[in-house]
Length: 155
Image (tube, rainbow, N blue to C red):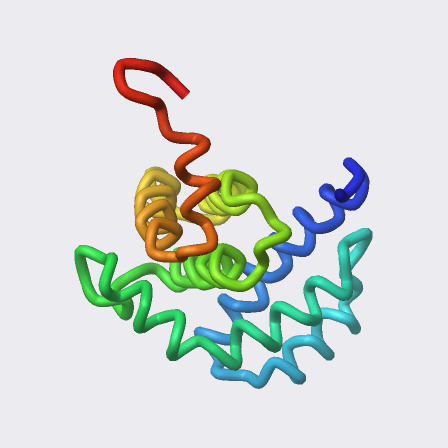
């Protein structure tokens, strides 16, 4: 289990990842070039290993993630703001590949990133899309079930 300090470092890594994924989407730069630029600029007190792993894994799987996300969107993925695409790609990747990160943490972090970097109401859209995405990840079913209110009850 991560300590509070580790959680903060990982949260800061996610902020940098959104910026890096945005750069990747806008410039088509390679993960290697983006990593080099971010390291040269200084990453601060973040989980550097997490940043490095995810920038490579997500950029390697962009087409696959986009295909899965596209089925859940109300418009073509290309019409989304590049920041929202970056947040959705990061959240979808974590939901699908990083089972050690709790479902609720992925959703909450993604919503926080949308509030910080996205358009005014984009956090609602991000929340809905990633919640539906998580519903399609079989290994997340128990987590989603645990947070859902029971019949006539509340969560």
